[in-house]
Image 1 (cartoon, rainbow, N blue to C red):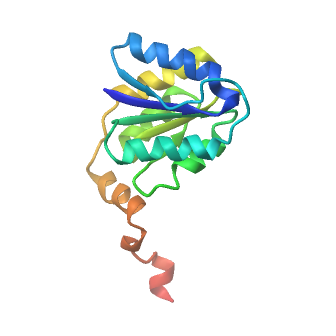
Image 2 (cartoon, rainbow, N blue to C red):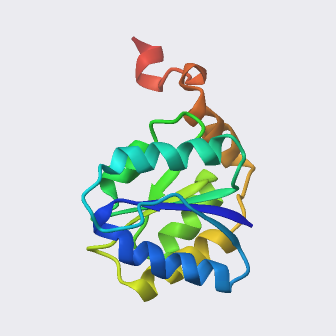
Length: 155
């Protein structure tokens, strides 16, 4: 699988560990930076990651920052991206199975290397469940499709 990985300065070390792990597993990895721990802005790297996932250059994305929150928000600004902030394997698997997540985010200050690897394993090995989830996932990229809630219909 082709996977892009990007971080901010707070997660450079975790990014390097996960990049090597993914390569060991046989994946093709595009490291989008940064190369050093010099201060950078996570939105720049989140947007870069979102673009290469959206245009099909890679199949999945891994976004990392100190908490995982900021970079996940940046990635999710792209309408084609469904980036889930995860901290353990079950949420990573559900992100794929229920939400067809095409990227995950993790926080280097909150998630250790072994747990991050377990999250990657779950994310990469879980297929989208489809079925009842398909219409909901479609609405994530097309908010105009959203139907009225029962409360709005009654008004």
